Image (cartoon, rainbow, N blue to C red; front, side, top):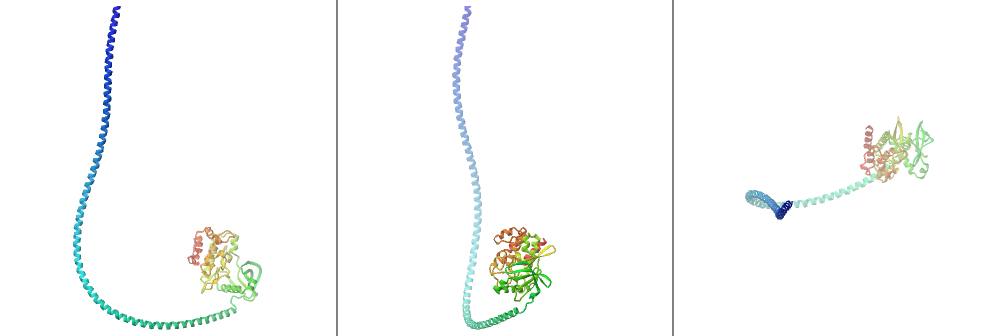
Length: 452
């Protein structure tokens, strides 16, 4: 047992010795491992350094390669430039040869010019000789001109004599015109003293108490003449008593009306011409455009038909021979209506402000709301009537009872729905009379619009 214990202890000691040896070996191995680890660490550091250096060298190599490529590009560019330069040099050589040839040609031309200069010098010498001859001729012409001026002076004296004789003839013509004017006045006075063919005896006219309308200088009543119903206009007594001017107006209207014959003009029958209140007899119409437009709006057909009637009447007056007549008071009240079947037709009436074109025009003859701009002056033409008729178009297109408003003219024209008629109205309202259409143009457009 003791022996066994000793053996165990001996074995244990051997094991401890072996263990110590192993510990020593282990420590040696650990030391070697640390050394190897340190060496590995150093080696890795060197490897990292080598990698860094390798990258730098690689980058340098890349840069060198890029520079080398740039140098190659520059080399190719320089080579191309060299080729171009050589080509240009060859072109310059060709140009130089051409310039040399041109210089030779110029020298040859210079020699030719020298020969021409010699010829021109000779010609100049000859021309100087001719100039001396012309100077001699000029002296002769100057002498002839002097003689002609003396003859012209004689002719001027003859013209002065003729002018004096012409002035004497003009004086004789003026005296004859004065004599003719006096004779014409005497003839007109004699004509006025004679009874015109439009005079109607007063006792043949029967007046009624039915008033058809009132105007600025007269009243219209219903009457009878030769068994027919007629309209009779009477001038206010106060006007006749205050001035003879109104009787002259009445006589002028009779003279104008008696000369006019047209289906679209109110038919003039006759008038009295005695010392009593003048009576003006016309056919009787059913109503007026003013009265109808105050009752209701007109249809597009009625507007076209009535407008065409008015335009035809005014065109007849404008074309009247020998002197055109300008009606200066066209308004809805002066357009009278009659029925043809179921259609209203129009006739122009009231010649109280009409006048012959050759006569002096008074300003503002009619209603301002229907007037053209020049109606406010004495510079009046047939085309001013277009201002009146365009306002009639507007009047017929508006609601019952409304009249044209000069201050809202553009606005009212824009309300006309018919584009053709609206464009025609705007043309009629041009400020310059020459820019407006003629009455014949208006008739043509109205007729065409009725066919469309």
